[in-house]
Image (tube, rainbow over all chains, first blue to last red; front, side, top):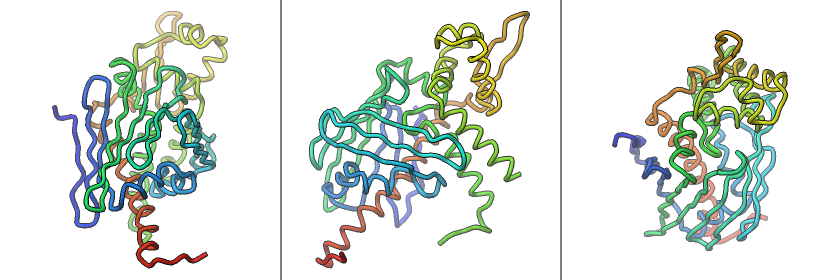
Length: 176
Length: 119
């Protein structure tokens, strides 16, 4: 299968991989330079999640971020770009195992949304993060691919355009 | 050029900000459909659905074609991509997120090393 891509390895950052693992699931991996405890906190504390979930480089603003990381607890993230209508992403937590595992539903698309599960595995002070997006059926994942939607990455096409736009503006507006 | 890009982006965000319109895209990802089909599926009036489809069309996410008396909707050219390209886009989003996560994790790590707090 060629449906796998990897970023250029550099001295500074670790590689992010993304792969369709099966008919119903999609997996992203990355090693983060810190202990699992801190990575887990960054996923479960609203004030920390807000710092990284909507990457600054995409020019989006986070309007609100509510996280109640307990089994059955809810999360809700709202963000927008420019003068557009805000978009909300929400769901609830299915599993919360401190420092090792988190699982949540994605309910903004109505019923039949996918379930996200992330695991944290610490090795020598670094943490391997494995994120799995499991769709209810093969058709659901195929439809997501066809429509360009994928949960909170649903705007990734738009993100991508923004990226191109930023690249176009690039040299003149470069920030350090 | 840049203005055009920004206008297009706003159109995309506007189009995607509505749950019904996201539902229509998902539906069209499975099969083409007429406006009548879509209106029934989403329990709306024809006029209401025409409006939603118009917004999606404006954003380039959907195209429509009238054959006889039926207007058929399908995903626009910007949506028809292969899986590899889609996965790469998704990977880029997560790559950017993880870069920021690295920074968030770096912060408390440094503080712990210094073993002191600033407030």
